[in-house]
Length: 357
Image (cartoon, rainbow, N blue to C red; front, side, top):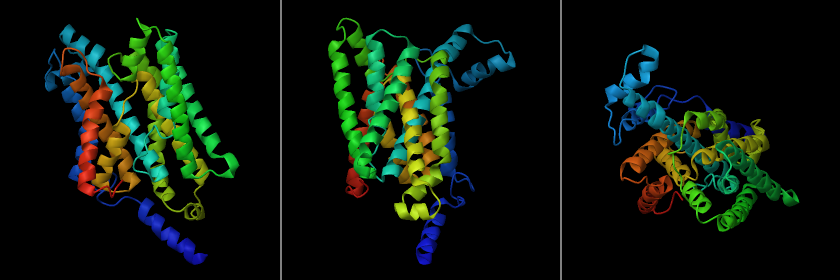
C-alpha cells in the first residue's frame, strides 16, 4: 500500500507541481509570450478591419478617448465602440470559453475527440434558444432558455449515467450521445413548426452562428457566466492532470474525484450554454484549439488550459473578422470554422497516422 501511494505521489508531482521555466507561470519563453499576447494583438488589428478602415494607432486612441478626453471623429467612435468592440469582446469570450470547455472535456474523459457536445449541452442549449425564438421572445428570454436547457441536458446525462450504480466515464459519454440525439430531434421539430416566412429563417440563421447582434447590454447578461466558468476551469487545471491517473490513485492523493468531475462538467456547461445563447452554435472551436495547444505543450493541462483560452479567443476573432469583411453579405461563423477545422484534422491525421486520436 505504501509503495502504491509513493508511486502515485511521484506521478502527480510531475503533473501538478509548480511549472518549470518553460511554462506560462515560470520563466516566460517566446512562445508563451506570443500566445498570451495573441488575443490582445489580434483584437487591436481586427477591430480596425472592415469597410470603414481604422489604423491601429487610431484604434488605440479611440479606445482610450473616454479616459483621456481626446476629441475623436464621431464616426470612428461609433464604429469602434458601438459596432466592432462588442463583437470583438464576444468573439474573445466565446472562442476562449468553448476552447477551454473542449480542453477540459478532453482531459476529463481522456478522449481527444470530446467536445462541449459530448454531454448534449450544446444541443440542449440550442434547443432552448430555438424554442424562445419560436415564440418571438426577447434576448433575455433566449439566454435564460438556453441556460436552462443546457443544464437540463447535463442533469439528464448524469442521471442516466448513474443508473445501476455505474457512473463510469464511458457511461457518461454514452449518455451524452443519447441526450444530444434526443435534443437534436426536438430542435428539428421546432424548426418544422416554425413559420417559414419569418421565424424559420431566424432560427436557421441563428443556429449557424453570428456575432452581428452583439452589444454591451447582451454582454452584461451573458459574459459573467462565461468568465466565471473559465475562471473555475482555470483554477482546476492541475486537478485535471490528477484525474488522468487511475481513479484509485487520484483518491489516494486526496482528490474528490466525483465532485471535481461535476465541477468541471458544470463549468463547461455554463460556458457553452452562455456562449450559444449570445451568438448561436459555433462548431469546431472546442475540438480544434485544444489540439493546437497540445501540439505545443503536450498533455500538461496547467499549460493547455490557459493556452486554449488565448488561442481560442484569437482564432474566433480572426474568423469573425473574415466573416464580416470577406463579402458584402456576412458569412456564418460555423461555416468558416468548419472550412478551417476539417482540413486541420485531415492534416493532423496524416501527420500522426491517427496515433493521437
